[in-house]
Length: 168
Image 1 (cartoon, rainbow, N blue to C red):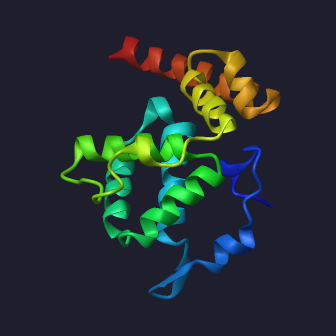
Image 2: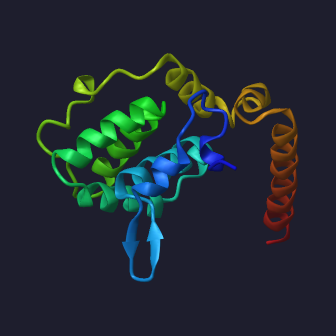
Image 3: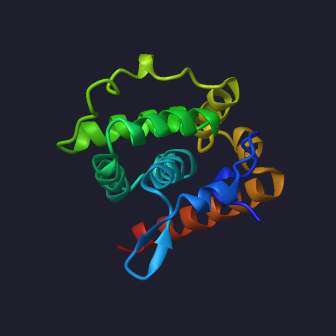
């Protein structure tokens, strides 16, 4: 079992470590805010890049505002780089800054000062950006079966949208 968004990243994410950092909220446990921020960034920008909801960007801004300075921000830099999602986190934070009254803490604003992204991170980011433009890049990101399934969903919803627009 693995978190779907982390599948195939070329880096093993230790789920025991992930859950050991969980925090208690009311009567349940949830991921630590740093881990949640990474997960939401990846989900919004790599899974749904062309369908990003402004609500997700607001979630990213709110999560980032809750991070403790400097320890959580240092952990965010380290984990996002180690897990090969630094570019997703960087771009999610840039979107949050541009849409909401939010700024990164002093010492963390300049992404050129963050650890450099891993080559696998760069490849995955480029594949995610190209995913909706090319069925071939979709296959590289998702695998052939999931790509075909995604393609069929795309065709189905395009047909539904066309029928809806032509009826009204």
